[in-house]
Structure formats: structure tokens, C-alpha cells
Length: 160
Image (cartoon, rainbow, N blue to C red):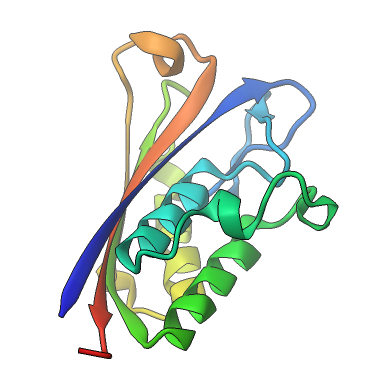
């Protein structure tokens, strides 16, 4: 049986933080505020995968109240989510991530983002889609106040 899950995350852009998106340090004068590295793309993806398996969400498994996740690398969290999924008898089919940001432009970094996700989830790069869009200067992302990401994941329930 196949299952799908969706994820969403948003973080505020601030000074004196690095900008991590899908495991890539994107050169920019602002970074995302969060307890971990605040990687919105990987957080949304973790939620999509966990949701597909009905395994709650990233905040449940990696709470921002736990000091061990302070500054955490979201690629490590994504790998842990994959392991949790495998432990429950699921496998990942494909994933799709959409990054919503007015700036900076993501296009030059998307191939590395795809490679990172492919490696962390142990799936072929052809099963990973990463895209970016703007909101045409509308809303908080359009004003450059933050970055958002949406993700969807297809998993296979090997238990059925």
C-alpha cells in the first residue's frame, strides 16, 4: 500500500545566522531563525515523511525544548527520520519540495539540494524534486521577512 504525506515549515529571516536550505549553505546576508539550523526545506520534508507514516511531526520527535537539538544539522534529523521510517517497515518512493522565497535565488543550489536529499534518504536523485518560487512580492515571503517550504512524500507500506 502506498501512502502520502505533506509537510510545511516557515522561519523568519534574521541577521547573524547562516542560511541553510536543503542542506546547502546558501550565501546571503540573512539566515533563518530557529532552535536548530532552521532548514525549512528539510523540516517540511521530515514532516511529509513522518505524516505519510502517521508518525506525528518533527517537533514531536525533535522538540525545540530539548537542548540536544540546539543548532542541530537538519540533514542529521532527516537521516534519523528515514531510519525511523525503515524501522516501521516503510520505504520512501519519491519526494517533492517547494521552497518559497523572494530572495535569494535558489536555482544555482538546487542540484546540490537534490543530491543531499537523495543521499540522506538513500533514494535515487531522479526520485527527488526540489523547486523554488516567489510570491511575487506578496506576503511575508514576498517582503523578505521569511522563507517557507512545502513538501510531499510518497512511501510504501511494506507491512501490507
